[in-house]
Length: 110
Image (cartoon, rainbow, N blue to C red; front, top):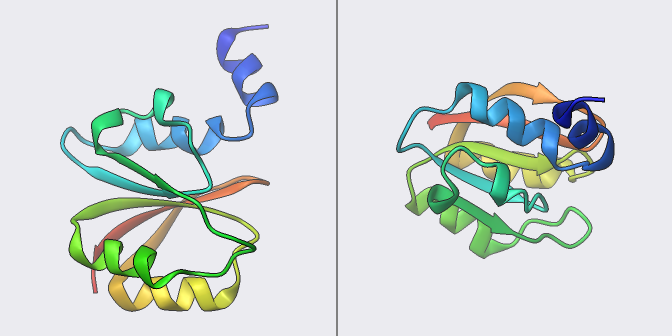
């Protein structure tokens, strides 16, 4: 088994960050909810991680997306539709990756 195969099998956080590493360009920021795979991020200094409780968005999380120039968003698949609606008001969201744990979106200004 290769290292990649092992990580995909053993680490539910890895697949979405692996895809991020394939598409992100130097200097692009990532906002991640419930995925703390910062060690695998293309640029750990530009990878912001936060928690959410039961898929409910916090005012702080939506504010952070509005204030910073994040280009990518990683969120768990179980998030509530209200979370996605709140986030999509701040940024246009294009789905780049989906697995059984996480969604990866490219963000552009709304």
